[in-house]
Length: 362
Ligand SMILES: *Cc1c(COP(=O)(O)O)cnc(C)c1O
Image 1 (cartoon, rainbow, N blue to C red):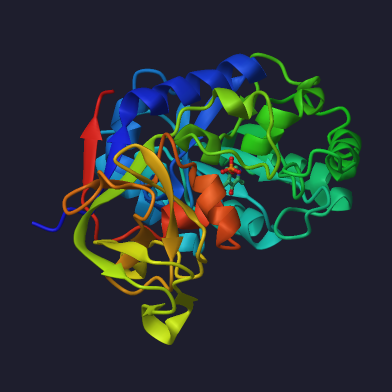
Image 2: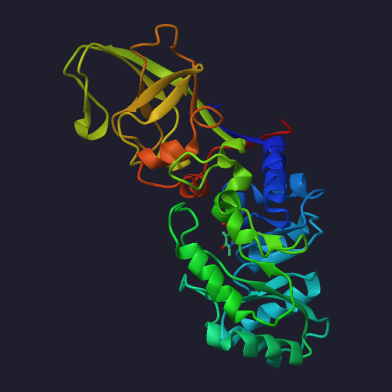
């Protein structure tokens, strides 16, 4: 059997969720969209079910998958519905629903829901992707309440630049939010992972009954480029690993792999690893990207191909056929691999495919 696999440490997942709660002092919706960032939404939600105040997903298809697997807590649709006819299922399953546009508000007003909905009313406080304009926010709030179709409204917005620790934009967005919600008495939800980890000052208006929305931090990866103290307490959840399936000794000046993108500078022992971009390993990871071989640091060499990649065994005489290779995990951080490849850990995780996910309780 091909040795490529992703080990998922559910104990680490629970640790990270707990950290989100503790550092925020608020309730936390575990964001498990995109199959829990590639970690397997059902298994991750099951592992968090006892602990979690609720879950958040991108669409009703993802929400239904969780309900069908027996997840009973609140599930928020982060973009609400895409078509008005989803409202029947939203009502039936009790999903919580973001309203980010006037057309959604109008669809709720026109709908025939009888069990009043929980709506998260999203303000565009400056990211300018989705969300209501500040000038429309209070009116939308009142219309939803007046519709008779809504039992509860949570006030929500999203930060565009919370991963930049020296950037004033998040504080400006908070001010826009505070202005727009003046006089409304309702729970609020603003912070994603970087805002939870790096911006305690953005949470100063949060009560224990308010909500944070941690995603990437649950999976133990930092959203920051620089070292950050709270993020250092995260435990990586996924270990992507495989084995060396072939070894060769090359003299100096020999090319390795497609395009001869690496040429040996000295006599080099090359190991071939059963892992490639078809597994989601980033094709743009360059020579020098860190890997761990039998616990020893080494580097990627040459171009990543579809099913295989090459590593440098020259300084690891004990390593060879069958040696275990960690592509990312507890020692080689996904965020470091991502930085080498011009990507982010979010994308590395979401791109994972073909490799079996193996779960452990840690
Ligand atoms: C994906 C998402 C999150 C989680 O973001 P992270 O950076 O992964 O913590 C939070 N809120 C919204 C609206 C999202 O779409």
